[in-house]
Amino acid sequence: MIKTTEASAILLRVPPLGAEKKPLSEALGHALAENIHADRDLPPAERSAMDGFAVRSADLITPPRELKLAGELASGSAVRLAVTPGTCVRIMTGANIPQGADTVVMVKKADDLGDRIRFSSKASSGENIIHKAEDARRGELLLAQGALLGPLQMGVCAAVGRGKVIVYRRPRIALICTGEELRDTDAAVEPHELRNSNGPTLYAALTTMGFPVVGQKIVRDSLDELVAQLAIFSALADVIILTGGVSKGKFDFVRAAVESIGATIRFHGVAMKPGKPLLCATLENNRFIFGLPGNPLAAMTGFYEFVVPTLRRLSGIQASEIKPSFFLATSSRITTKGGRTHFVLARLENGISGLCVSPLATRGSSDFVSGGRSDGAIVIPPEIREVEAGTIVEFHLWKPLF
Image (cartoon, rainbow, N blue to C red; front, side):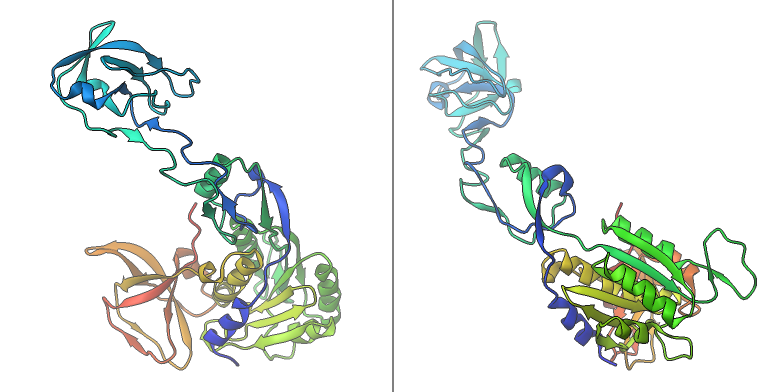
């Protein structure tokens, strides 16, 4: 059995999968496999920051002053106008500043007299002007390799003409839920049977995060059947996730089946609660197999704390960003038995002093009802047994932000 920090260190070294070129419209949620640079100065010319009048500040040294209206410029207009002494140009937000002008006076600070405009106050040079290259210069790095493409990052790519981008491929996932007692979600069940809840939970989590699920299967407690299904899925998926059968019971066949298809066990057993029997193995070509416990909370803890960071690393996301943490005050006291890392289910709440985390009481690792009420988990290190209310704790968000 290894420590959680040792297991995380192993997974941090996972190399990304191969890169592929995608249309920008299909790249949302992918990590860049290239750097994105500005293809020109941004903005490429001096522009007006608002609707108003482009003028020479020198003409308004001694207001009030009337200036002749010499024309009008709309945003996107290619018309070239010039502001000469005694004249001004009506200008819209985003339009290029005409030659000779060095400031823009807001509409509300001027009186429109038809062919002349009255200005009642002074204007400072550079006022209300967005300067050329103010945001970035041509060739400047805008997004680094490994950056995750969210909506704003997509906008940056679009602004510099990147209709296609090179991104890391996302891992394809296969799910196997093991157990003689498992039945399909909509099946009638006897008292000795359970509906499969881990499968739908994992499928929902994966698809919400954008990872394609290429296969799902319930496999009964049979070594031969499990080996056969692993062989099928190992040809289809980059990562296979199993639930159940990872402990040391008579019918726990996951480790034997994983070894039977030639996988190398990286670790089996992590000093954590819940989820201690967690298994991680690798196949050639950067493929992974994870064995999670069958109890729902244990399975979800292993999934969010170790599987998801691995999937994100395989997707090319930078190691420093694969497991974001929040440090917040806990609303109540927490006690553990120590000796291993404890992941305590918790909810985010707005307290008197701001956002805090509220620990949830659970009735063991099979308590999926409490799991459904949680937003994530508080991480309690193995050497700590008591955490007083108000203490700043590390919190890992599991709940998706829709």
